[in-house]
Image (cartoon, rainbow, N blue to C red; front, side):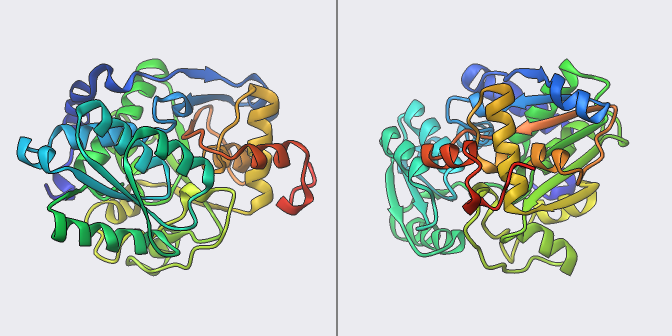
Length: 331
């Protein structure tokens, strides 16, 4: 399916296909953020999904669309953690073999969650690109089907169901903010939201420590970016030099991209813990951090996608204690 032929209809089809397998998530009002900004700000709680992140939506939509023969052979994916957990969760539900390829950078908390799914885990190299290469080796050698974590129309359509839910609960929404890495989330949101009103702003937030999509958009083509350790590890990973879908869709539909330093991300995590009593990962808190540090001017009705919950307890404790090693002094 060419990128230009992916439509809102495909997102509605994904919603029907996913059904109750990925339940609708709450959209809650944030009175503190709203008071601070003078805007009405809402949080879309994707962190409470069964797999701990929004990525179960795309994973379920894609795997459900595989042929019976493909499902019998099994699937493999490469991941910074959350998509691997989502693929493993769906595969377990459907009785399908799953091999999850990770780099050595994936945090222990996410590896531990993966182990509980029963999927086979293979740790390869220092980056997501290394894990991706191994995935395609498994496809050639074992006949497994590679489930791409973002650059796939079925993945994009699945993630877009978040946008349909936002429109249903908050039809006056004018701004949606979320973590931007490979672009699957924002591409899906665009296909759900822009047909309803092209004026709805989509804002992507990335870590400054390896923003592959941001650097690619600046260069006008997909480029390789070195990954560095960050609180927002889910936002790491390349977009693929042969990217077919998400690069062009982000280029066309995302209205603004913001890079965050570690102190911004830490502040967002601390805010979610202290104000909403939720322990969320750095990528999920990035939008909050961007608002708190005034990198983003919210609209009158703004939604922040809280994308996932996979975070080490030690990291949350450090954030809560304003650990100076995180580069945040609480101000």
